[in-house]
Every structure is written in structure tokens, then in C-alpha cells.
Image (cartoon, rainbow, N blue to C red; front, side, top):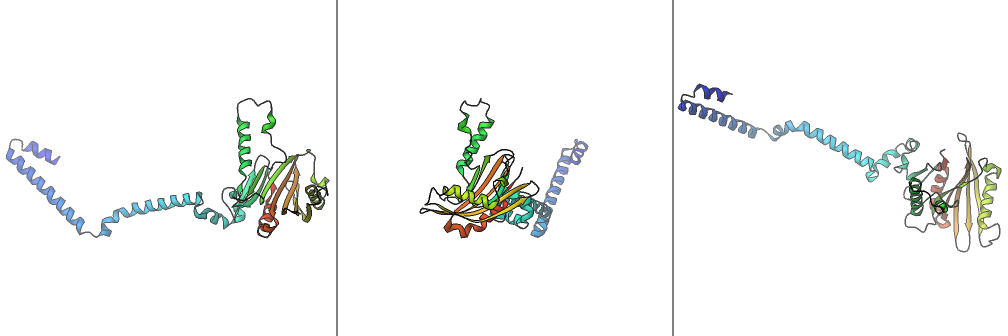
Amino acid sequence: MELARCFYACKSSTACFHQICMTQSSGDKKESFQEAKARRDRSPAEQFAPLETTFRRRLLVGVGSATLVAVGADFLGITSFLLGLSPETSRNLKLDVLYPIGGYNRCIDTNEGFEFIYPASWVGDQRLLYRAAERKEFERSLDPPPLNNNAKSRNINEPVVAFGPPGTSGELNVSVIVSPVPLDFKIEEVGGPKEVGEAIVRTITGSGKRPEVKGTLVESTLREDSIRNVNYYELEFRVESPSFRRHNVTVCCACSGKLYTLNAQAPESAWPKVKLDFQRIAESFSLTS
């Protein structure tokens, strides 16, 4: 605007116009030179002072975002470590379904209504996972069911879930079988934990029809759930033959027309290493519905 007023005031005098413009231009250059010199004279700390607040804010946002990503992805076990600081609270919140807590993950089967923990290094049986995925896809399919529907049904003696160490023969594992029983069936009608344990051992050994296979009931205990009115029979037994020796821990219970059997087995040679794991697995098994 200053330049425009000078132009209109001096439009009758070309020499005056050029003089004013040269003076203005010279002044601008003089001011620019002084500002540049002042910036060069300032220290690096003074030059970057205006950026300090912005840099600090971005740094905090970046660190916060990285922390959230690390926790969410359990990077280097950060999440598991934090949850392990209060394991009981974390387990009560079922966070061990997503992240290992104290070296264990949790399996929750909402369809059959049970849960238990297992070593975090173990993996699920891929065959069972594929079959479960096929059944889910079949249930969601809009096509009419085939005439022979038995192909999609699950054998009652087939485990619902199974876990074991990766890259092994499968002799060390934990699995759960859910079998249909009458709605009014109670496991107590069969007997106490000892009677049921001995009956299971007789069934495995063929009730004496297989003399090469021998079984021994080691321990039998009762665990009561007064909230759901369910009794859990926890059994420990050994089975051996000329070709194998196994140690088993089993939990049995019945509710709402279903008989639940969790079985954890290991070669007898591996029993000392997995004994504590098996005890924790058995103690954690419970019905959720």
C-alpha cells in the first residue's frame, strides 16, 4: 500500500518515482541483511528454541504410539511381563486368552462351555482346527444340507480341542472330549473319584483281556464347584505295555446332558518335567456355562 500511494502521488514525475522505488528497495535489502546477520550471530540453542516445544510434543506422541504397538503385539514379551505383575487379576479378566501369563495361555470353548490353561509354547492340533473351521463353514452355508449329513458330524470320541508341543510325535498332549449323556446323568451315580478312576483304568486295559497292558490308579481327588453345582473328579494313573509307558492326568465332570473328559498324557520319561504343568492344567479346567 505504501508503494501504491507513492506511485499515485508522483505519477507526474518519473524521476521521483524511480527515486522512491530505489530508496524502498535499498531499505528492504538493508533490513534483510541485518536480519540475516542477527540470525548468524545467534547460538544454535537460540536458533532451535522455537522448535523445542513442537519437537517435544512429537517425540512424546511417537514414544506413546510405539509403546501401544509394543504392548498390543506383545513385542519381546512386554505385555506378558506387565500382566505377570498381577497374574490373578489378569487371569480373572481372561487376558491370558490373548497373551501368555506366567507361561500359560487359556483355551475357552464357548460352544461346549469349558476352559483351561496350557503351556504357552504348545500349539493346537491343526487337524481339529481344520475340522472345526469346516463345521463352522457348513453351519453358515446357505446351501441346503446334503442327504448324508453324517459326513459333517463329529465322532463323540474325537477331541473338541487338543494342544501339544510343536514338532513332536503327539504322545505329549492335552485334549478334551465332550460326549452326550442323559440330561439327568450325574457322575456321582457311577461312584466316587476312586471308583471312576479304577473304571477308567479297567476300560483302557481291556478289563484283563489285554494282559500286556497294565494300568495303575495313582491318585484320585474331588474338586467341588458350589456356584455351578458341579463336581470335578481329578485322576492320575499310569498305563504301560512292552511298547510304551505313559502317565495320565484326567478330569471328569457332567452337566446339562454332557460328559466332559480332559486328559493330559505324557511318556513316563517326560513325567518329572511336565508334572507341574499337568497339575495346573487339571486345576484350571472348569465349565463356563
